[in-house]
Length: 380
Image 1 (cartoon, rainbow, N blue to C red):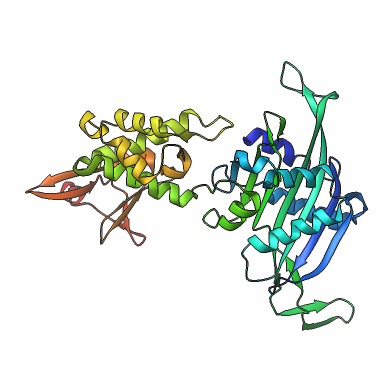
Image 2: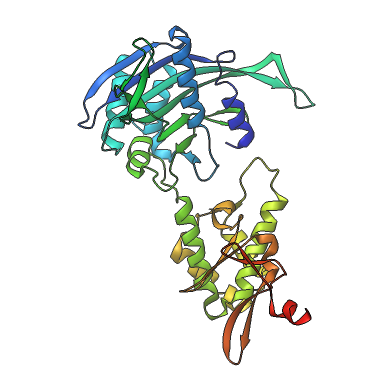
C-alpha cells in the first residue's frame, strides 16, 4: 500500500464516515489470562468510546512506510490448507460473528505476541463501499465499484496511570488520585487484506510497529506467517556493510559523500511519489557507479551484496540515506552538517596527516559566545 491508499482508509476513521460493522476485544494480563472481552456492533458503542477507538485505529495506520508501516506478502504455502492467510480470510468473511474463530484468534496472538505486561487486543471488521474515480481523479460517490471487506487489528499496552494529586470537583478538595489502567496507543497492528491499487489484495497485508526496531518477529513469522523484513536500523547497517566491503580501500571521504549526495538527490526527485523509493541489488550497484566507484570494485559488488543480504533484499532509500544531517565521526569529534551545506566540509592531507576541514564564516560561536576569526582580527 502507498501513501494515497493508506490515506483513503484513514479518512474512514471518523464517526460520519465509519464503515465498521463489528468490534471485538480481549484484555490480557501479564500472566496471559483473559480478564475481560468485548463483542458487539460498532454502532452500539457510546460516542465517547467510539472516538477513543478511532484514535487508536488511526495510530495503527500512521507512520512512515518502510519503517512503522510495512507491506507484507504471504508465502504460497500460507495460502493453502490451514495457512495463516486462510485463517485470516475466514475471520474476515465471518465478519467477526464466529465466536470459536475469534477465540482462536486471541489464543494465537497470546502465543506469539511477546509482551511482559498487560495488553488489549482490538479487532474490528469494516466494509468500505469503494467509490469509482472519474477521469479527473475525483471520487464518484454514487458509482461504487465494489466493497472492500477488511479486518483491522490493534494491540495496545495497558498501563497503570501515574500516582499523584487531583482536584475532586464533588468535594472541592485536592486529594490523592485514584490510579486507573489506561489503554495506550498501539504497539503493533495490521490491516488485512491489503488495499492495493484501490482494490482488495488477499495476498498481502499492512503491518504496523510503533517501534520500527521491535517488529515482534515471532508474531510476524508464526501468527501472520509472513517473511520477517529487515528493520529500518538493520537496513541501514546492512547497506553500510555492503558499501564498506565493496569499496574496501577505495572507501574514501569523497566517494562516501558522493554516495550520500546521490541518495538524497534521488529522494528529492521522487518526493511526490506515493510509493517509497526502494533500492534493489541492481539499483544499489547503479548508485555506486554513479558515485564514482571504479569497475574493479564493482566487479566485487555481487559477492559482497549476497554475503551481507541476499538476492531478493531491497532497501527503503529513506532508511539508508541521511536526509536531515550528515554525521562525520572520529573517535573524539562528531560533526553534523545539513546535506545542503555538505560542501563546507572537506577532507585534506597536510604534511602527511589527514584532516577534516570546515569552512568557517564570520558567525562562529562556542557555547553561545561569538568568536572572531584571526583573519578578521588581522584586518581590524
